[in-house]
Image (cartoon, rainbow, N blue to C red; front, side):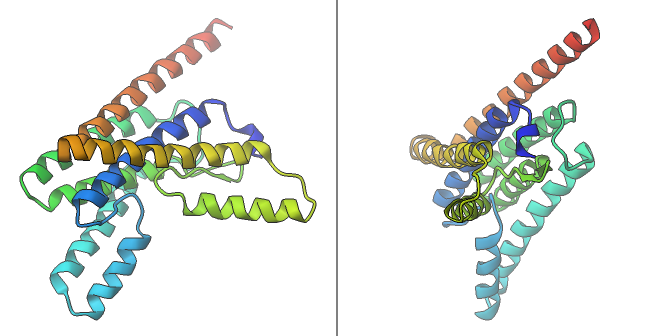
Length: 225
């Protein structure tokens, strides 16, 4: 049940969605309107480019897709489990994401497409960090599923079934974080261009440090009792 989720999930989910929304906004503004936080649009564009015989563009899009998968693979190897649980190596994953975003910025500033692939890998890594917990999908790099689930819950409510208020609240928090991140990313890009990715990287580091401190505090409290 969604009510079994720990309270830190809302805070962490909002922060991660904020990061992903920021990165994707920068990508949309700077990568020829190519998003990197999810693969639906890129997959459709790949089909279009293949149909038009644009092999160079097709290869570029394919590498973006593969980079996302590679990032998710790194997360799976590092964390090793789908369920959200305090104590898993989320801090290490966030530090890797921060480094990847900095490298992406450096590559982009030198005009290298490798920056696109690194940004996509960072989003793949983040999206794989949190997957399922007690039947609840916790995605932080895209919102299509969240809006779908909200629509389903609205339909169930119209049928007279009770609404899961905490699930609704969690989804609204994630959606708000993603949109808010888009605002920050757009403002950052207009002011600092690709260096705005440093803001997302810094947020990853702050979140990693806060998580590690909270984890150690909980461990210390458990040991004392």
